[in-house]
Image (cartoon, rainbow over all chains, first blue to last red; front, side, top):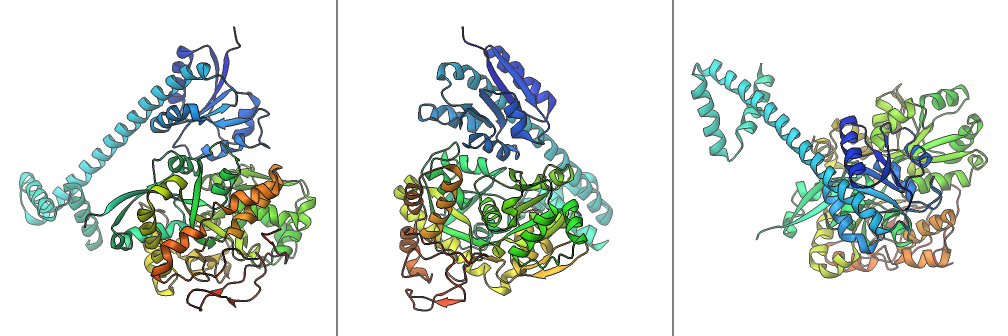
Length: 194
Length: 389
């Protein structure tokens, strides 16, 4: 029996980190460490002597990890971005799912596969949730702007809410723009004029 | 004609301007292209996006494709630097603590003399120095290493750490770094947030340093020569527009937009005008040629520039210098540059290599049109790099 893999997950958001740790532990026998605070990141990682380091691809602190791949870097063992030619498709899948993995050279692919599968699935889910959250936020924000624009039209034209919305929609259609864009333009313009 | 959509990655920096201008001012459109500009969250992500085909071209730190050709770092896809996007444009700055120590001496903060600045810093950096750069493979790191090796800073224990520029102010406040070297607008943002003061422009160390390149996958360059040439022409014309003084205000407004740099246009204008505010007291310094997008064949990818980078990397990472030099020379594609841009008014030097550091005054050289004037490309210590040795 080989020793369990040591995996470091770099993630500031606690809930997200816990989700990833759970998925990894279900997939294989491993010891997982989470690093949330990025100050002195590469050194903190080196202290765990990990076999695999996982980080969100959109995380700007990822550049701090590149030091791990250098000959003079803080890890004694050589580390590669997870891109050996045999694993090219898996790497691409990982990039699409939004995870980057730094893997110690020479780690056998059959040991890595379950880890990467679990990580890719979990990061994909996180990414999707994040997109949905951003969408919801944007929709809420747009709703607010449209309401304000409606209010402005109702006040200045003395018309009903339905009529005001109708006018916004027609203007948007005529100009080939989205209702939210027209509403934003109106709110901005009225801010300038008031 | 329906425009071909081309995904292109960039980092939100002032020197991404040629890509943004090419798309926004119609230079891409006139070549039948529509640039789908993708802002990258980090340099490593940008490199991966290009290497694994998410984008077809990218705004890249000039040493990255060279380092990859040398087998340094994790990714080894073959990349070609088909053009320089800009020369110079970095700043070196110090945090509050180091700034106040320097002010206690009679250091002038002249923002010009690299040797004086090094001596002054060395005199007050008794416990060593940690300097933040955006990426291990960057002109920032190369300029710093070069600067240390030829000054009293060689005797100081200096560490270079990677810190993403948006986090530099926090890293200074936490004491993780004492100083930094970044591209604009991040130096000015640091000054405005009261995090520190600017010490030198990058060009005070090497006066004509290739900063960012337009990089593509080498196999893509081979399979899509026509698309590549159109992209190169659009971006070259954007650089020519950027170099005109009357374009400055429009360019600053454009780059400042929320979807690009998302900073006040006044901050972007500082770099474009070469008029920098170097301290929170508002001291101003003027640097002619602070960033160069066109003039002096700034976009010509000299093979000697790639070789200089390769020699420096080889020295630090223990690689064979001659092999590194040969591999790097093949990364900067002056051949593709000549093919793509011959017909559109770009000045072509007669040679593809030069002695780096040998030009002390603006110098007319042999070129296609006979009017090419090269700018000084000196190193601050007067050394000359001969790419053939």
